[in-house]
Image (cartoon, rainbow, N blue to C red; front, side, top):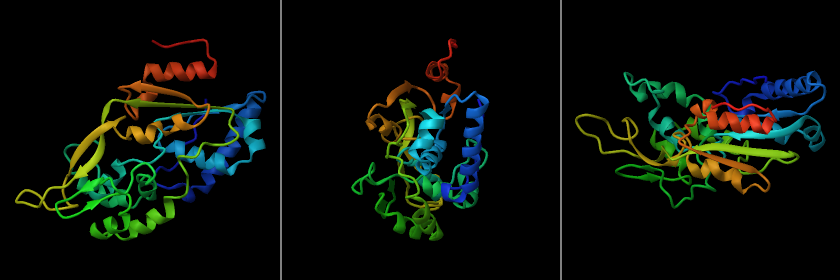
Length: 266
């Protein structure tokens, strides 16, 4: 088992060296393991990085070095939560600090616009951000950035949104597995109220988050898209949270079985 950390603040177009380092790591691991093929196990946005990497490699290279890929908690079509963070910030669960205090830093990360909801899964007819004066769907990103007074964000979105087609099945991979959680309250829509004595208007307030089904971070419609890829082995773990799934016993046992390990944890 070897790790491949990357700078999560960056979109794939800014992380060229990471992809080269990953290629070297895979080839080195293959040789160290007496030429046994490697299993890739990306998680969350790392899945999109894995898709970008695999797109760069030739079919012959993938056939030689990659045995299978295990996608866990993958936001194949993006995440509605990224819109909330862009507009009003996120406090990472630090309840003593307002999410707005983190917004400036978070907006500077191109990976945030990279994770915006895909219009193929969230149509223009479906509002994702609801305000007293205007609603915004995936067709309204330009006006969204104009209205939050962060127009450079639209340039960042244009630079990042088409870097990886998260809905396209990777080619040349013999075995694909896809695991995610479900049945947890997950941001489905973001609702802003009119300004009053206690808070400002959109976007300078903590909005109401309307929940839907997902893993607590990513909506089910984004997580589950891999089930439409022919031949993919698909697993849903009810109650498994986006991050904590990696230590979920059910998830661990699935991964061990895929790896061919003759042990289980319970």
